[in-house]
Length: 302
Image 1 (cartoon, helix red, strand yellow):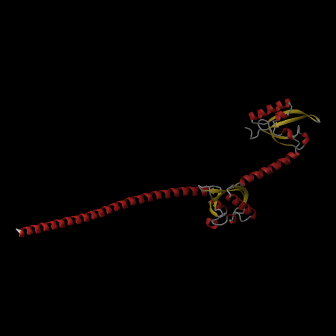
Image 2: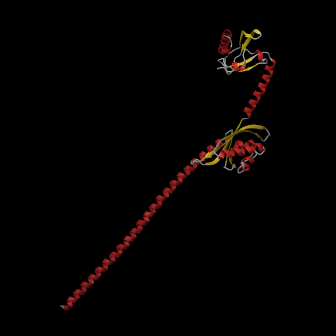
Image 3: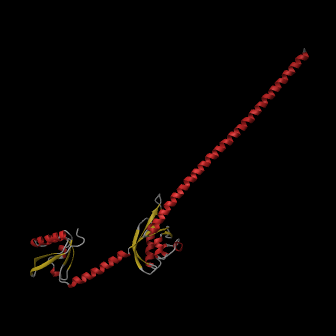
């Protein structure tokens, strides 16, 4: 009985040991499986993240390319406007060095951008022919750096040594914070305007010379008969002094009967747009004087 009991006990002990071995093995195997599962899940998650990140990068690249394309289109439009405008336009840094200049300005002196970009603006061929205008430009740049707009008239010599008149202006360019970062200049060709002004002055001098030898009086009137200008060779021939009649309606200066005649004549000129003549007399210091007024329509009459 004793031996059998020990045998039974030994068998039970072996059974427990075997059961513990199997349990331990199962635990170890479960742990390994859990670790392998976690690793597999981690790899899958990393793979998903890589795919998602790749899609994000691809989307960002597409957006970036779209922005680049849009900026290129804007730059192309700006360049087209910048180069095709008839004005001379350019950009300076705050020291007055030339950063950009349009084709119109370059073509005026048959220059290339590489020959002038980076130079102090006053040392470029547009200005280096005159120390007077160089100094004026330096003053303009200093004023623009202070935030002011500076303008002045100047002259330039073209490649053919022709003198042209220009209206130059320079002003500051500010960023979003209001800080001045560049200076932009614009130059308009006013040569034709100057030629017209000169021709007008010459014509005016010719008219003055003609009126100085003619005994007639000349009055320039608005449609309401306001006297805006006059010419005469003999001051004593005037009915009243210029201080009295200039900028005043003629019909208010003349005596009533004459005023009515002149007013009717002016109305006929305005209506018919043709030459009208009217005769009248005025009491002068030398006695009653007789006149013939010839009214001619002027293009400013509306």
